[in-house]
Image 1 (cartoon, helix red, strand yellow):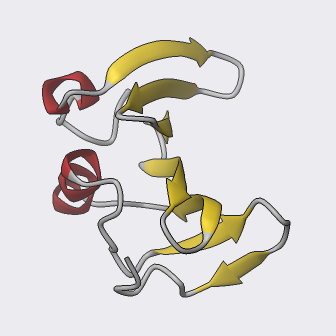
Image 2 (image 1 turned 180 degrees about the vertical axis):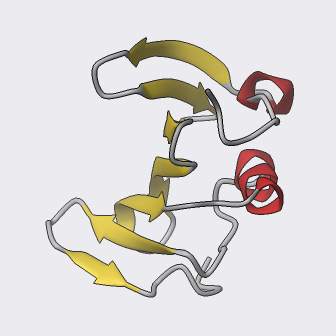
Length: 99
């Protein structure tokens, strides 16, 4: 059962497959990859950031509006996530308006 009503494909995301054991669906749009965990409302977007290089943004427990914002603009900052960089590690709180 999905926590959200919005369908990523309605926002131009292409379904790439899923892992039923991990309960994750994979999507891609314009070079951005998204892992979506429908039962928890968590997304992970992976992209090439213009100044930070390859990054991953995790957002947990998104409400319907926040999820739709991420689907519309995966660079959207929701104040409910954290970011990792390809070089390793993570930095909490970077999902706060730093596009």
